[in-house]
Image 1 (tube, one colour):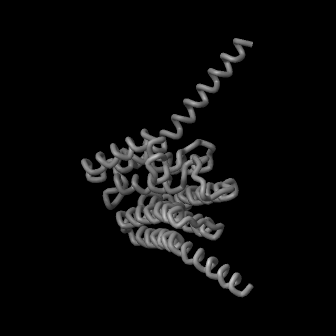
Image 2 (cartoon, one colour):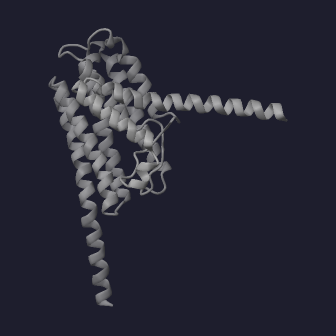
Image 3 (spheres, rainbow, N blue to C red):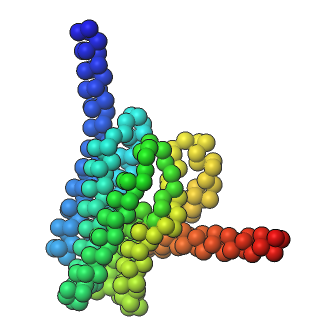
Length: 258
């Protein structure tokens, strides 16, 4: 009896120690988000952008590590969402506000705040809809890390240290609003494939896009980064329009047959 109790206790402690690994990366995600906010307040917009990128890398690796050590928990999921609100909601909102919207006063605060609020809605909806956190499924609505990296890369690519250059400055508010709405929409976006040969073979278009994107980034020295994220965002929109059009045509055909 005592031996069985000790064995169960050891298993429980080992499971806890395994969970510490991905949760540590999640905590680093939150830390990077906080540092990005501080950098934005201090006017260091390039540093603020890079810390959002670092947060994205930690967010990517915590999921990979959780699958590698075969551990997932409600605690880890909630910690991940809290970290994402900081790094991919508040941090990019601070960045766009200080880099472009500050002169609008309260209007600028409210506009950038929309991104935070809708991002929080996006994460909350994901948490209540997913029943098995170990299974990767397609996303309903634009994932908040993609929205954050699209918005922050826009600042990085088109801010000259003083203002966002013309004519790109006229797209700040439309981009902010569209990204916010896409996060709470029902537009489908693909999840990243698992790191296995079989999983990667099932998504050749994604692999091709990654390769082309890496080549473009190297050749342009990062100047095409915003456009790469923009393609990801637009792909979901165009696919939704195509599926809606196809469904409408199929319904018309069915009505004609009947």
